[in-house]
Image: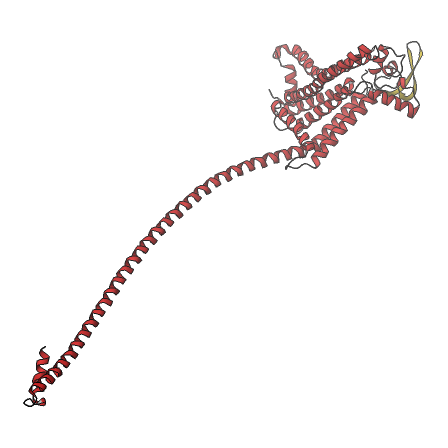
Length: 156
Length: 299
């Protein structure tokens, strides 16, 4: 337990260790620590930003969905209206077509009737002439009375 | 313990003696020592003290340099491969220590930017902690190993091979460190306050300029007390702790009952000592930082 040159040796060793520590140990480690601190802070900020952005995106998505729903509703009502219109149109068309067919049928019927009447009229004339010829036989000249009979037939 | 015939006081003395290298002395007559002019290891406590100042405690130097080298090797290895990404376990451990010291320095040191104080704190804390830690190794392990090794290798008498494992129980180590701290204190005092400022601080406080001599005496004592209290506090605590371990160790040879009690005592004291070795390293570091801070204060 004597004070001797060990004192100086220890002091020198201590100084060397301090110098080494100051030059080669402390700066790189503390720099890495600071860098990590910055990284973590950046990461946290980024996470915060991401969260905010996600909220915004969610809001936007909600909006888009809402719009899409409205559009879909619009389309559906439009389609229904259009459908109704088509049905109405078809109904109208059908009615018009039916009327047209009915009219033409009636016209045809009328035509047929007229034709039949004309035929009948013609035949009535000849029948009447034949009858009259048979009854009158001689007195009546076929040629002289045809015009008269024709006039009669026209009055029927 | 080298032989069975050794006495308790001899055992204790043996454990308190450093392995001193210096100029060999022999006791030519009773109490009269003369130098042989050769260099070598002291073979007794008296011879070690006769060697005077120009002798060196090889055990203290070897242990402290090995431990200091270990510390620097570990931290340098971490510093080389350090990344700011995910840390490895070793990096994590080193960072934990460095963060702790950085926080302590930030809390106690207000002298502006100084690249020295924090590495100084790290060196002090870890180095002293490692040196103190040697106290927890059972007191006979390393000394017996060294003594037997030396007797095998060099054929010397193992009784005369001393080896003190804990460098901080040798007053040279703590006082040497305190001396460096003192030198740094003076350096920064002169640098920050200027010669005039520093001298004014020594002579004009605390009683003003009319009590100049008293001020000088008081302030000088205060200044000199700093490194001494710093070194001797550490030395005293570690010496006392080591002494208790040695005393417990002497109980082993007394009887079976005492030996079992000693085993329990040793475990208990070792557990308590974990606190002391850490605390002493921490106190040395904090006081150094505080002294550095005081050296940076302008008035």
